[in-house]
Image 1 (cartoon, helix red, strand yellow):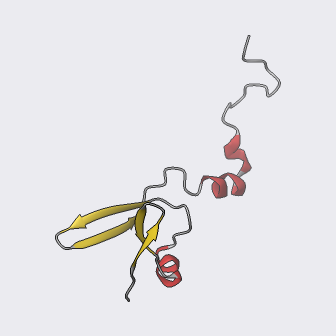
Image 2 (image 1 turned 180 degrees about the vertical axis):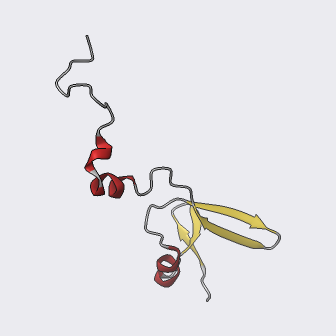
Length: 78
């Protein structure tokens, strides 16, 4: 698979083909790690510390009870 260096504002970049993004499960805005190893540029999916939280909370609403037995209407600012 070949690509060209392109201008992006004052920087340069490479467009990644849809097949590559799909295979690596990457979307626009996802972080990636860049490493230069000898004469190669290596791209890896970046660390996403909260990845999947929304799905887990939606699947088990009981996990959203972060306050335990504290009444929901209790004013904690006093």
